[in-house]
Image 1 (cartoon, rainbow, N blue to C red):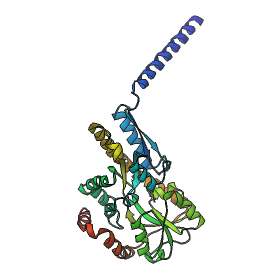
Image 2: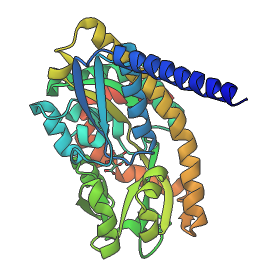
Image 3: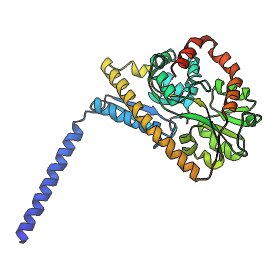
Image 4: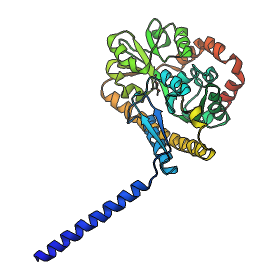
Length: 335
Ligand code: GCU
């Protein structure tokens, strides 16, 4: 009996050694990476865009058998969006996902894709981004030394405020509202009679808490994930803009890759974008539930008020779109 037990014990140890050896061989068979790249993301680890980034990095690693490794840095670790874009152009960061508002500061042609009340709904926006216009603008960023890879979803943006709710457009008058560091967004707020306060995403929570601003605007997942709902409890679901996001590679990084690797990168980016869109849809619902449970007050504005908002945006359309009316017409036709 004792002998049998010893035998079983020895066999188990041997089996464990063999398994360990096989695992070691399969891991060590992946060659040392030829390229190690950085990927900047300003959202938290579990946020849909970050999950999309991890998925992208895993796919690229798999498809290149480990030759290309992409290390994702979430939480804005590599800097604010504006700084990340500069670092991409001058050699510090290889990949990123950024909001179009920030990118349009470098390539103002992109402004036509983020005009207030431009899209009727998400389907309309995706019909545009997945068509020739979307492809055209992915290529357009080449003029600022960036390579556009895919479009990520960021839903619709609405206002949220600290002291009082917004029920009509005139309620915004005189309020200090944080906007992205974008000239178009500043102009939009000024047309509404508000004081635009441009600042980076990372600074908004403290500004709301300290009362340096009266409100801000963003989508449901950002409102929830940043905890802004804890300090600004009035959410006006006006959905004034849909600002898509772009997944990018620095052109000097992209151009050092072989054509077949470039193809892999493009395909993996597109696959990750589809994944992010799926995650986005469910995250919007989850975020809405979380913040509603916390007791926030949701208001909306009537159709007439939306019309008024649109009318007030006429100078912004005039300033940013007069040279691109053909594209605006095409976008309107895509609904
Ligand atoms: C969204 C977007 C971020 C952006 C932020 C902002 O959350 O995903 O990339 O920085 O808006 O309002 O600045």
